[in-house]
Image (cartoon, rainbow, N blue to C red; front, top):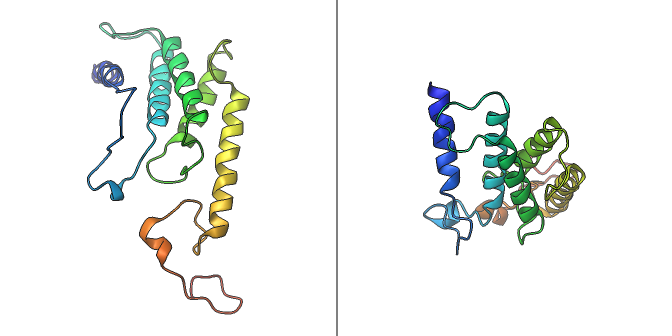
Length: 170
């Protein structure tokens, strides 16, 4: 009973998503949680709804019982992310869930038998994950701590270095 309620609530929340936001405001102050991208959230949410609906018969009263509808929506948002302005721009941080979303969508596409006419393919998802990791390597080469993502206020601090040290003051 609780799972059915959660599934219905998840579909309701997904249906409320603003898919044409102006400036994305995620938290106050913006500097604390400066997310600019939202397509990854919709990709992951749609993939999770696909997973839930494809696991068995949908509970009575479920607004949309077509699991493939959500798989198509997930593929749409993955494609929108990949072709959007923030692809691989700031991926390995606490708010961009693209890595998880792409991984889950890849598995969902496989689970669904690799349906045709999706807006994104498994090779495209893998290529984008590779691109994100390559960008993180480039970022880590410029970061004094070797982080694969910008760290905001920490970026202004230079670690103590000893000759032959690892940059951690050791």
